[in-house]
Image: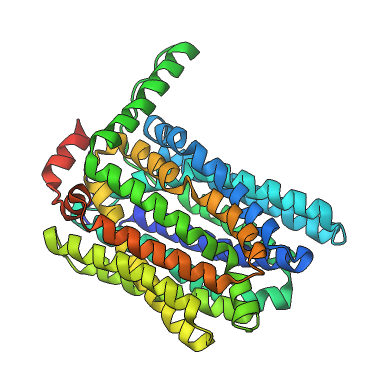
Length: 428
C-alpha cells in the first residue's frame, strides 16, 4: 500500500473539507436541539434521555461498525453515512416548518432522528479513524489528526459560538435545515475521494459471510484484550467519559441557572473550549514529544483536566468560566491527539477499523448511562449543577492519580512506534 507523499494531498483535503462543512452544521444543530428541548419542555431529565438514546446505538454497534469498516469499502461507508444523516435532519426541519404547533410529535421525531444519527455514527466513526492513517504520510499522522480535530473545533467556533445567537434570531427549523444541507455537501465532497484499502475476500453464501464476520469481530476483541496497555487506556477512558457526561447534559442549565447568563454565553463558553482545543491540537501536531516524557505529560494533563472541572463548578463569574473552559479545551485537545495517534500507528490497517469500533463501544459504554442519570440527579439536587461538576471533577483527578501508578498505562502512553514495521504489516 503506497503512502501519500504530502499531508495536504487531494484525498485528505476532500475528506477534511467535507467534514469541516458538515461539522459546522452539526454544531449549530446541537445547540438548536438542546435549547429547543429546554424551551419546549423545560426538562433536564428529557434532555438527558435524548442524549442517552442518541448515543446508545453507536455504542452498541461499534464492534460491528469496525468489522464492516475492515471488510467493506470505507469510502462508501463514509459517503452513505452522511447522506442518511442529511435526509434524516432535513425531515426534522420539514416537520417543524409545516407542523410548528405539534410539539409532542416533534419531540418524538427529534428522538427518532437522533437515534438514526447515532446508529449511523456506529459505522461512520470507525471508518474515518481507520482511513486517516492511509491518506497521509506516516510521519504526518499526528498532524492529520490535529487538522481533522481542528476542523471540529473551528466548526464549534463558527457553529456553537454563534449558535445561541442564531437560535434566538432564526429558530430551530432553519438551523436544522442548514445542518441537513451540510451533510449532503459533505457526501458530495467525499464522493471524489480514493481511500487505499485492502478488502479481504468474502466467503460464498450467507453462512460463510456470517462466520467470517464473527471471526473478524472476535479477532478485534482479542487484539485489544491481549494488549494490556491498550486495554487499560480503553477502560480508563470509559470511566473518565462517564464522569464528563453530566457536564454535557447540564451545561445549558449551568449557563442560564447557575451563572445567570443569557443563552449567548453557552455559545461563548463552548467556543472557548474550541479555541483551547485548537491550541492543544496544534501543540500535539507540531511538537514531537515521545517516550517517557510524553507519558508523564499526558498523565499530568489528565489530572489537571479533572481539577479544571472542579474549578468550573466553583466559578460564578462568566468571564472566569471562560478562562477555565479555554484550559479544559487545551488539555483535552493535547490528550486526545496523542492517544489517537498512538492507537492508529500501533494498529495495522487491516484491523484498525475493529480497534476503533471497539474503542467507541468500550469508551462510550457508560456515557449514555451518565447522561441519563445527569438530569435525574440534577433534579433531585434541585438543579445544583455546580456540586455535580465539582464531584465529577474530583473523581476524574483521583482516577488519573491512581493510573499514574499503573505500569501498563504508563508504558502504553510512552510507547515508540516503529513506522516501518507498521507499514509492512499494512502491505501484507
